[in-house]
Each structure stands twice: as C-alpha cells, then as structure tokens.
Length: 230
Image (spheres, helix red, strand yellow):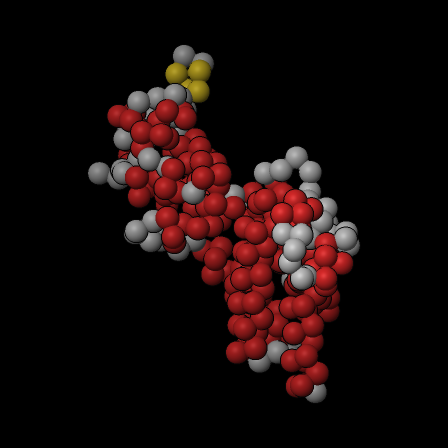
C-alpha cells in the first residue's frame, strides 16, 4: 500500500506531528551538510526526536526518504524568466539560480557518489529548466550542439564552484583573503616559487566576483558561437 495512504494528521492535540514534508526537509538538511550517507533511518529519527518505527508510518523505506529529499531540493529551483533580447543577463540569472540551489545544500549534490541506487524518478524541473535554457540559446541563433555544450560547461562550473569555493567559505568565520596561506609559504621557505609568492600577496576576489568571472567565460563562449554563425 502506498505510503501516502498511511499519512497521519499534521497535528494532534494542537501539537505538530510528523509529515512526509517534515521528514523530507530534515533529511535534506542532513544530506546538505554531511551527504546522503549520513541519512540513515536511525539518524533521521534521532534528529526528528521520534522512533524509527514512527518514520515507517510515513515513508516506505530509506529510498523513499532520499527521493523525497531530492524532490524538495529541486522544487526550490526556479530560475528567472529567460529572454532572448537580454540573453547575457538571462544566462547569468540561470547560473545564479543554480548556485543558490547548490550552495544551500552542497553535499546533497553528491548523491550519485553517496548512493548505490539512483533516485527512482526524475524531477520535472531538471528537464523543464534544461529545456528552457536550450530554447533560449536556440532563439538567439546558437546551434543545438553548441547550446548543449554551453549548458554542460555552465553546470560543471557552478557545481565545482559550490563545492570548492562556496562551501569552504560557508564553513569559515571569514573569507580567505589570500591565494596561498602564509603558513604554507613559511613552511616551505626554501622552495623556488617566486611567481607564486608574488601572487600570494595579491588580494583574492570575493566569492561573488569569482562566480561572475566564471559565468562571463561561458557567456564569452556563447558569444563566440554567435560570431561564428554570422
């Protein structure tokens, strides 16, 4: 029997009780911080202050929990409208929407590495938003293979940025202000690395500036295809 048919009331004697939505939200927060491997039924029950048995009144199994969490994450991905007349800002806005999604739950992005079984379904936003991006580039005159290539590059850049730049910054009290920590250079004072020592003295751009620079690379790539087409 489907889990939905066994749902309990959302309140009991005026107090909130478990729902599939509450379970999904907690599982996603756990996965976003520590990855989906941390989302065991026992750990999830402990975070919610209930018994494992209580969870099974609302979900079929752990795979159901994973699917619910991923669905909740992708429900929140709503890129701004994409307009051919302002395609550069549209590409940047699309990238920012991806970054916001990824930086909110960075470790959840590694679900394919954490889970032996893939999600049992594909969220429609993964298809709809991908299609809208491709349509944007098609409408400005980019061939479909080049549009797919641009989306692939953009997605990889945003994913790596969220994991390598945004997540470390979020886990420190201040943003790292140097390219290479002084302690690293001091520990290897005998190394002949003059260019790197000079570079280390330069201020590191903010995470937002770095992100804008990466997006500008993809925009330049798209512009080059436009120039070639004309």
